[in-house]
Image 1 (cartoon, rainbow, N blue to C red):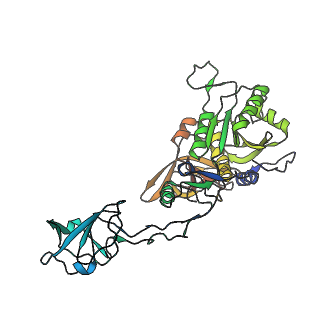
Image 2 (cartoon, rainbow, N blue to C red; image 1 turned 90 degrees about the vertical axis):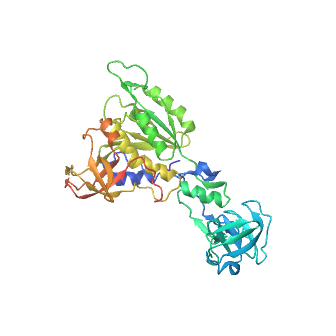
Image 3 (cartoon, rainbow, N blue to C red; image 1 turned 90 degrees about the horizontal axis):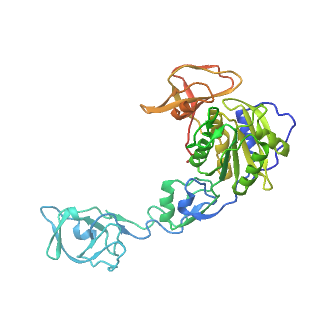
Length: 421
């Protein structure tokens, strides 16, 4: 959902940061609910995680070996080994012996509960068996190879904070604590639409003046990379009624809509034509390159947020990374929504146009512990092959005219969920 924005009749060009701020102020986070643990990967927690069990939950062995009273084996050496009768065995999950009689040993497996009275575990490698006795040839330290109950986590410990994004390793921790589900916002459902009578579905033959619809695939893939659920609609023609009907149908399954194309100043800019009549979408220029023409507002009875991105694939993708991806994070309730920029060494000198934020496509590599970036492709917004070679975007501010080889520059790494912000 989105809140009502102010709607001036003529919006002056905005900086990239001001436009992003304007958009995010209008995005309302989705309502959290319980969801299965594996379905929550990549989503932020709606509540703190408080341990309801201790880890470990009981004293247990960290080795396969023999549980003993330390005093019984403290003097054991290879020259003067200690002989102890083996009175039983404890395997993980199969507790049959709950206490140890001094002067005896119990064979024990990794993870099995240590019986009361045992104060160390002697690894198998330090022993051998002779009949019903174990011969201990090396003394452990007192308490060695025993994991004590609660030594890692105590009941009541706060282990994850509200807003923390759930990653792969967090899933293991949550499961170990007995959490089969957690409270998070739902994964945003994003409808992706392209417009243009020239667009053809990949896999079908082309006429001489047609092109394949790459944008909807590109943007749907970006939605998935940033943790959303993508619904890619087939491209519509430049007929206003066709686009309006298709948009109305798609709103039934959308938390957010992203369109590409039809937002410039031509006579067939169907997206702008249809949405301007609603009076709920602003179309303006952003002082950035690529991606100058932008639109944002709400559509439908549920006031679903909609981004209208430029039609050139590079412009559409760059716009997604700097505007739509932060909005997806906002929908899921993340506190940090702005793109994370990392310092990198530029390997070639570049020039930039003052008055616009330049987003330069670069290939990135780590060399000698340092991130290094090299420009790839040309400046054209249609150069999708060059975009495919890029790993990041160098972000050059409006007041920057040139950057020299070897200078540090801020880089947005692409297709990466902003986890662990």
